[in-house]
Length: 64
Image 1: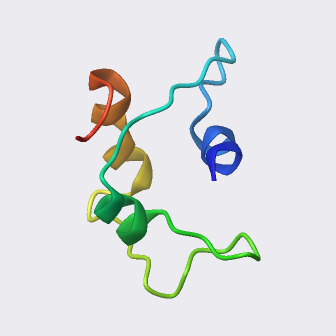
Image 2: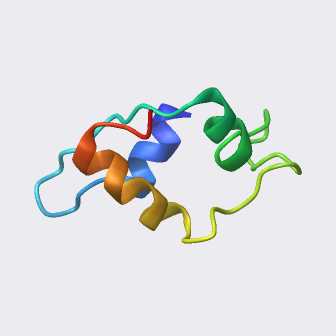
């Protein structure tokens, strides 16, 4: 999962990326993927969208 998230949220200007903490519930609700790399059928998109949901976590060091 880390490599897939890092490719989505990588800062293209300097090549850096951040690892953010999140609760298991958030991970399962918004990010869980199956063996095929696709989101599981139970996964929801956060109301503000995935990138916007991640922005505060990246700034503050996590949602936890």
